[in-house]
Image (cartoon, rainbow over all chains, first blue to last red):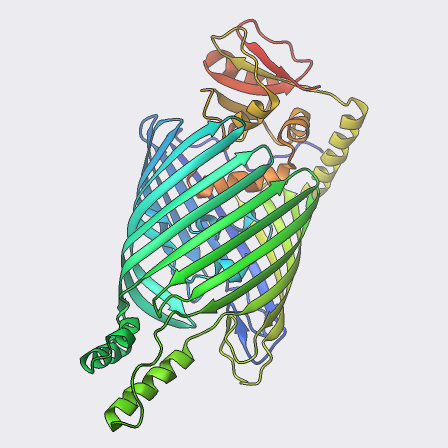
Length: 388
Length: 138
């Protein structure tokens, strides 16, 4: 009776050179608010916002060279299904890992595994940090140096690439090209303690938003270069991250802070962090997570005079209106979650999140139907996570 | 049914752990005969964090008692936290979890046939002549 089979990561494959693995999640969510949506959830139970399935193939070509691909099918409206990762890897020694191809952008601690719910305690990772302000992947190269200094193991990863795809802001989707994405990630671990620090700089944006660029050109030809810049996407965004984590048999503590500095109207400036504390009573785990964010846009003060010329008035009021309409993301949230690893490769989760935004602002809420809505809501989620 | 049997296994392993509170040994196929490792180094080897020794770790499946003891005494994490960790490592293309073996006999055979490999085993396992004991829990 006690003998049972369980799927294993290192399953015996048809060929030893090709390994298949994958992950999936089925998530149901309900928001107790009729005046707005949050992360796609409304006051009707939805299974389609975060449910997904992915298949990974790792092909070993030689002892040091391999090819990996990850195909993902997503049920959410704002996410496309397709190839998430496709890269060639070269590991000449235990100290070096080099990759080239389509890779996930490792902005923050869980950015490159944000679809792998099995890898983290939450159902929805704190949106204040993990909302897609930027782009999830890039095409380029990445090099990692792995070593140790006394009792501390460390990794330094540097990457460079470009992105061509969509950027979603406040429910609006823009086609963008980012020519230069540069990043560096430092990871340290010693026993049950780990930390991570990263900086990602992206510049040379090309955004397909004619209404913005036309307005920008009009401002420029009227001589208001400073005010025009914002609409021409001629700027850069830099994301800074720091996280600390401690894990043992009984409990875990994690804190991650993020700062995005940007002079683009397509990327807000964000300050956010979360703090998570959890307790393990195997096969169960609980967590409490508190997360906070504030945001702003670095736009130039309106230099266009009013009351001088009707055309200038139009530009000046247009500029004010545009700045006024830019979304803002102040949000505090408190989550309580329970995870049950009922097999070694499957976990069930339940999570309740109390959201407290700022009246009059977006605060990550979308489709706000009542302007007087107080930006408070409770999100209930149930999820099933698995890996194979 | 599957859950029942798993629960039964969990109870069994907790039970046997408390009665025969036992230890694990870490055994390597290495050319260095007087090679000894520290607890921290053993943890690093099995969590894929080792860049010093060139030893390939292999492990017993999750339902082995030795694994439970190893997780508790060396890694200091529950099996589910370890599985989460490997999911993060594998699906971000960083590293893969160690190959698993069902039985002590099969893992010993693998170690004997492959140089520069390492595994943990129940402390009462008889160590074949060409393998070296590099660590023992206390």
